[in-house]
Amino acid sequence: MDMSTSSPVITDPVAISPPLLGGMSSNMMPFSVMSGGYTGPGMSSRRKIEEVIVNGLLDAMKSSSPRKKHNLAFDQEDSLDEDPDYSAWMSECPSALTSFKHIVANAQGKKIALFLDYDGTLSPIVDDPDKAFMSPAMRAAVRNVAKHFPTAIVSGRSRKKVFEFVKLKELYYAGSHGMDIMTSAPNSEHNTEKIIHLEYYLQCKEANLFQPACEFLPMIDEVTKSLLEVTSEIDGARVENNKFCVSVHYRNVAEKDWKTVAQLVKKVLEAFPRLKVTNGRMVLEVRPVIDWDKGKAVDFLLQSLGLDDPENVIPIYIGDDRTDEDAFKVLRQRNCGFGILVSQVPKETEAFYSLRDPSEVMAFLNSLVRWKKHSLR
Ligand SMILES: O=P(O)(O)OC[C@H]1O[C@H](O[C@H]2O[C@H](CO)[C@@H](O)[C@H](O)[C@H]2O)[C@H](O)[C@@H](O)[C@@H]1O
Image (cartoon, rainbow, N blue to C red; front, side):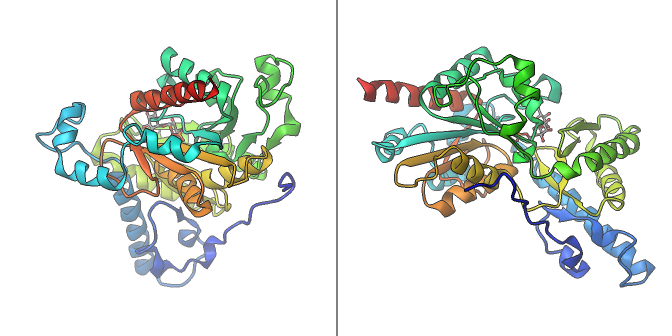
C-alpha cells in the first residue's frame, strides 16, 4: 500500500460537546472546546467547564504517575512477587521471560519483527530527559537482535534525538510518536544500502521519510515558545520540543504545582485548537489533532517494509507507556503478534505479556538472539 501521499484524517475537536468532557478519556483531550470559539453557556458555566477540564488533566497527571505502595519496596523483585495485586495481574499479563518457550513456539517458521519504545523500555526512567542514556550492554543487545530480525524504534522523542541515544544504523526509526518515520535503515542486512554518515542519514534521506504532520511544524515551534514562556516560573517544569509534538515534563515539579501546570497548558492550548494533549509518564504531550499514533506507525512500517503478512510475520512491540497501548491494540486487532508491557505496577493494558524493567527487556532480547542462533544450527 502506498501511504506516502496519504494524509491522516484530522479529527474534529469542535464536534465534542462540553458536557461530554467530564466523561471523556483524559488521555486524549482536545482543547478547542474551551477556546473563544465556543459560545454556548455563559461565563460562569464556562468557568465550570474549564475547571472540569483542568481537573481531568490533573487526574490524568496523577494516574500516570503511579506511586510505590507503602511498606513495599518496588525496587526489590522479591517484594513484587509477594504483592498479591501484582501476582494477580501477572496471571493476566504473564512475564515474557517465563512464557518465552510459548512465544517462540508460536514464532516457529515465521519472521519476527520487533518494535521497541525507547524511554522506560531501553533506558531507565531518569529525572533529566537529556540523560536517559542506554547502557552499552543494552545497545549490544539491540544491535544483535537487529542482525536477526527487522527492528524499529518507535518513540515519542524526535527521531534525531532518539537516534543520538541509540546510535545504531541497523534500525528503522519512528520519532514523534510515529509522526516521523524513516523507512530505510541505512546499514542493515534487510536493506543493503551503502554505509551512510550520520549527518547524511539524518538529513538527506527525505525520500524515505513519512511525516504525516509536517504541516504542523510551524505550529509546534510556536506552541513550544508559548509553553516555555508560561512554565518558566514553575520550578522543575521542563519543555522539550520533539519536532512534531512537545513534551511538558512535571517529574521535577512539586505536586502542589501540578494543577498550575495543567492550567497553564490548557490556557496556552486555547490558542491552538488543532493541537491536543495526551499524557505519558509524568509528562504532558502536546500533539496535532490527527488520527495518527504509534499503532498507526506500526501498521505503516509493517506495510512499507513488506512485513504485513500475518501468516508469516509475528510483530512484537515492547513499550512501557500509555502511548504504546495504541500499538498493543493494533497488534491485538490484527490478531497476529503481541505487545509486551514494561511495568512494575499492575496496569490495564492491551499487551499480552509483561516485563518488569529495561533489564528484563534486555534479557528478553538476548533470549531471542540465542533462540534464533540455535534454530539456525
Ligand atoms: O515514547 P518514548 O520513547 O517512551 O518517549 C516518551 C517520552 O519519553 C521521555 O520522557 C520520559 O523519560 C524521561 C527520561 O527518563 C523522564 O524524565 C520523563 O519523566 C518521562 O516521561 C521524553 O523526554 C519525552 O519527551 C517523551 O515524550
